[in-house]
Length: 184
Image (cartoon, rainbow, N blue to C red; front, top):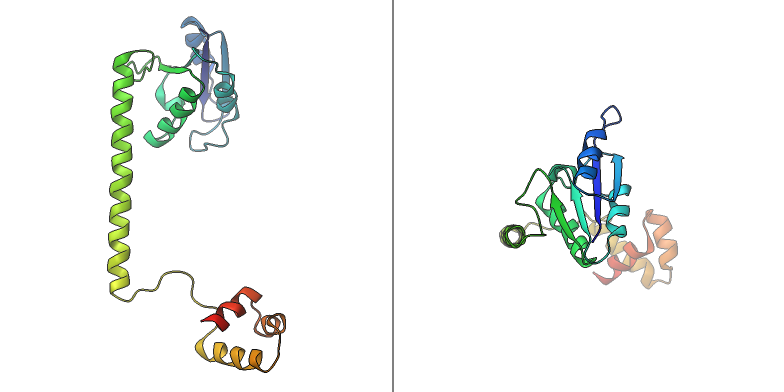
């Protein structure tokens, strides 16, 4: 089993030496460190490298959970990647977040269930709101680029032999818009 550490600070004037010392003291053989905002999930290249370096039985270690993830959803997505590698996770200052113990796995499983429950509630509320809006006559999507008169003239001109490309240029729209006007 190998312990792989991950240290992060948010800005260039901050220092992650203290994190690296603690990770090495905790037995990390390799430490990936970077200066990157936690908001950016695709700007944390060293975190991606750390996860790719994980092998079955390894442990990804960080000093604090907030060095790794900014939200529960971000954390659960990352922990799925760690689990897919056959590895586990541990936060030194957050002992409840430790998948190397049965208690830590239980807590993270419950958190994952709560996050999924929250997503389903949000989806349900959105669907209900959309139904209410449609019942009131609200139309969704972009406003049509062509008004009813323009659509009628396009249909007449197309029927008279003009091509969709000619009509699209004439009305400064794409051919797909002309096709939808003819279809509707």
